[in-house]
Image 1 (cartoon, rainbow, N blue to C red):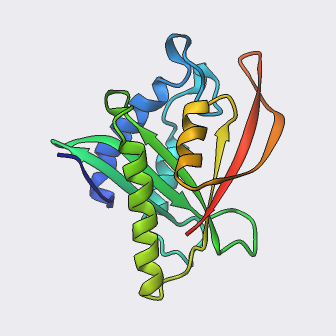
Image 2: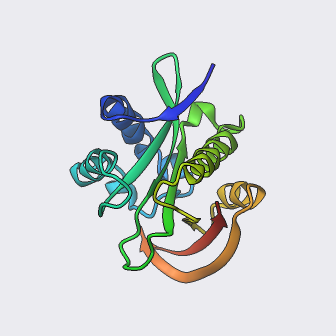
Image 3: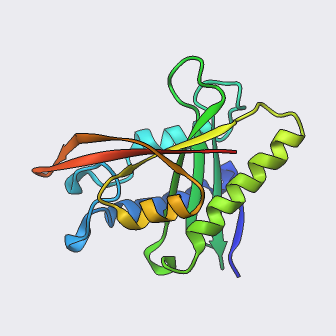
Length: 182
């Protein structure tokens, strides 16, 4: 049975194994990109490891904070969802969301469960007076219709699209911004 829980520093080695595998699948075998990374650079970087490791131990009032939840089954990470601080001043009420599901667990409702879990946790934190995140934003490559449909079905609203945001591996890619109130 899949358990979704907030990750700790002790979970990071397993999480990084999962994330490295997931990134290797980005655009592999003629599938569309789901991360704005070149196929040749779709790997877990040291910088990414550091951002996760340092971010999950910071409080929400500290720069670079991040919260991470993982979906575990039999000691294996099957998915994740995270929120993190934006880099812009005066945006403490917002967070950026990232999500991923292992290829073996896709099309089984895990993405919806992860999003539901995130919003449930955030709503309970509001009741305890923690630093308030009122809005969750996300960026998605516009051609990733399955992800866009998931987000729309979970109450995210389309805010805009940047045409020709990326040029990756000779391809122009648009980027869509979506947002949802907590």
